[in-house]
Each structure stands twice: as structure tokens, then as C-alpha cells.
Image (cartoon, rainbow over all chains, first blue to last red; front, side):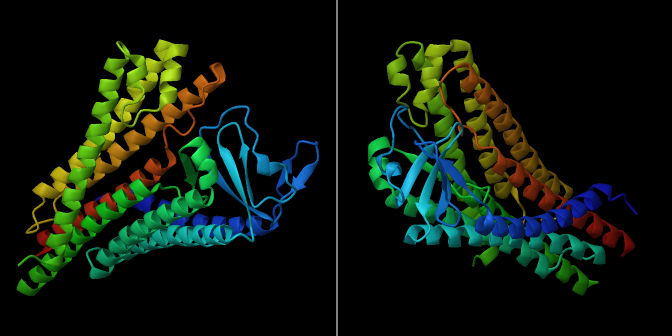
Length: 217
Length: 176
């Protein structure tokens, strides 16, 4: 019997990753509803945004001394805040685009958990000494499809946000948004998704060959 | 008649080729931009996939600019190579016998390349963080790094499954 230590370590990591993803999803859900988010205002007071605004990381080329006019209002539909490392776009939660962002974020995180679940299932099936099954080929394919779908969601996210804040974009040029939960940009999501689709097909072919061999024996 | 498997593999193969060409153009544009910058810096900053902020860095300190450009070129060159490697891998893949040690090793190599990309991005981000402190030039998010680590992880996991599959297959053959 060969030593499968690397395989076993990876399997343990995949299992831990799955449980951590589920826990972090619950923690994020909890904090997105209950955390207090206070933003310092020009008059020195703190504006409590709890449940009132949805925040999105935004990266743009801001002219240094520019102040966003609509941030002076008490409750603007949206406003931008320049931070040291990246900017933050705040959108009032009753805006249609904000609801879409929340749904997209939840969906992308659900996809993330789904990917972690499929990986866990593939590794657990290896216990039975039968790794080349059509189920596993489908699991790899599903991970690929989940990533491609995640890429589309990410694209839509950027598209709707860009459309919503086009007034600012027209003034500053390009603006890049980051989804809160999904680590992949659309480009890499498609890249990995298609790669896994290809690998799932190779896997499927392997299963067919194995079945043919078993029949021959 | 082509099977669904073959069709998907051909589509992905050509997508990989398009990716390789795209990143090669990006890499080429960055190399040419660096060369042109020694003669006409104002033109060099307008090249495809070049951040004008990198040229602000040039006027601040040419050594910082050189290092940042070297990392940027390395980053896009690695991306182009990964895409080409996938194209080559799919091109040479034999569907008659797909589960070989060679294939498993190649999948594992893709994960190593992605990991290399992550390391370059981390170095790049640390360097840019340092430059931001030294100057007022903000190049944050020039290198995205988290995703490459995750990608490398997924591909590595799949490669381990392939390896394990090959081992089981070999054991079965020996038993028979």
C-alpha cells in the first residue's frame, strides 16, 4: 500500500475548509444585519449606517481634493468615501440596485459553499477506493459550472453598479467594483470554470474506459 | 461524429489559446512600453494595459518603476504561459488513455504556476504598499492576489484526485 499522506492532508484541509465556509457564511449573515457601521461626518458627528446602507469596495482614480456633493446630504441615495487603500461606495438599502447586490452576494457565497461541498464529497468518496465514478465527474463539472455562473454574477454586479453610478463614472472614468464574498474576478472565474469543465470531461472519459475494462475482465 | 466530451475539450482548448494570445499581447505591450519610455515617456503611458500611475512612479524614482514594471511583465507573462500550457496540455491529451501519471503531473504543474502567480502578486502588493508610503502614488489593487491562491488550491486538489485515481488504477491492474 502506497503512502497517501499528501492526499490525506489535502482531504482534511478540504473538510476543514467546508466547515469554515459554512461558519463564516453564518457569521457574515449575522454581522451584515447586526453590526454597527459608523462613518465620521464633516461636522465631527458619526453617521450610523446600520441597516441603512449597503457598502461595496470600489477602486477608482479620484482627484485628491474632490468632495462628493451628495455626501453632504443627510440621507443620499449613494455616496463615495475615499479610503487609504480603496474607496467605498455606500448605497441606500431601499434602492433597487442595493437589493440586487445583497441577492448577488448571497448567491455568490452560496456558490462558494457549494464548491467547498463538492470538493469535500469527492474526497470522501475516495475512501471507498473507487474514485473514478460518474458522480465524481459530475461533481467536478458542477464546480466548473458554479465558477462560470459566479463569473456571470460578478459581471452583472459590475454592470448594474456602473450603470447606477454612471454620473460619477462619467466624471472620473473607469471604476472597478469588488464583490464582498467572491474572491474571483470574472476573468479568472471563467478561466478556472472552463478548465474544470475540461478536466471533468477527461474524468468522464476515464470512467468510461474503466467500465469498459471491467466488462472485458 | 464528435462526442460531447470532444466538443467541450475543443472549445476549452481554443479558449485557452485565445487567453494565451490575449495575455501575450498584454505582456508584449508592457515590454514595448518600457522600451518606448526611454525615448518618449508621454507616449509609453498610453499603451494597452498600462497604468498611467506606473509612469508617475517613473518620474518619482526610476528604480522603483523598473522593479514594478518587471513584476507587471512577469505577472502577465506567467498568465500567458499558463494559458498556453493548458492549450498544449489539451492538444496532446489522448482520450484513449487519459489517466496517466503524466496527465496528473501536468494538472499539478498548472497549480504550481498559479501558486507562482500568487507569490508574484503578493511581492508586488507588498512593494506597492511600500511605494505608497514613500510617495503619494496610489497603485493599490495593481496586483490581485487572493484569487490565485484559491485557484491554485482547487487545481491542486483536483490534481491529487487524478493522482490517487492513477494509483488505484495501477493497483487494480496489478491485482488483475
